[in-house]
Length: 347
Image 1: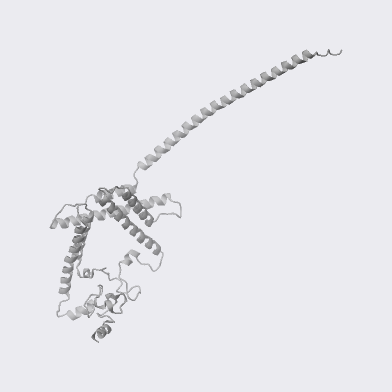
Image 2: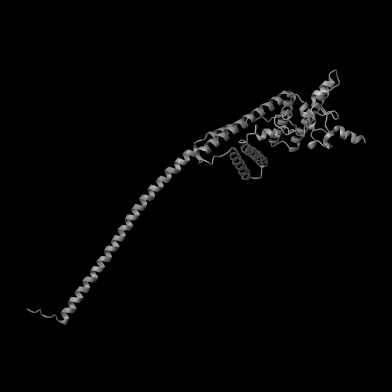
């Protein structure tokens, strides 16, 4: 049996039906895609809010933990607070007589205690830095001192000029002292591995240079009194009293009501007073007597000027002695060039 051929109208109707079905399927597909996109958006929003809430909670926990750790005082912080408390015990009321001497002694003791506490705090900070620093990057004492000096400068820079001039001057001065201590610590660190270094560089700077330059010389242990040769003539009690007067004058520098000129005047007065004491003691000790010749030869003083070997020799300042120092005199009491200088002057 042969199929009946479709007429033109039937073919057009079938094509129209197929086209309508295609349009309907396309619309359904687009609607499904839009619904899927909306679902994905809702899911992403839900997941994103959940993750964001979780991350915020974790950040809050971390912030709380850091705040608790920072609020917990370290050993170095406690020691520094103790040093500041101890330094606040100094007394500044105006006193005279025995009470003034006692006040100076108490203030010096308080300052020494505060300095000791700060040194312990520095050691605690170095220990903490050593725990947190990787191997090979251990903090040194010089680095700690420089960091502390920088902190003092930042604190001074942040203070207003009005009414804080004295406080800023104290902070800047303390930073300079810390820088010098850091430089000394660096020199000590550089010399610690040297087999010939028997003492720290700071101690070596305080010792007298010997003419021969050889270790173990008997003159190497003679202290050099920088600019104050008469200090060698004071006994131990007079030296302690002199240091007390100088410390008392130095404490006046940190009092806002004291003028700098008054502080300098006090220092000059203390030096002048104890120089008279030293010269009187020296004159009494070197007065002519039965054993005066023996004392002169034992003292090692210059035969021409009479200055002790640890002081500046005024007479030999122009002779051929290195640096014009009296410690270059030969043991026994005469400058090796004094005779030549004297003969030249007599000519």
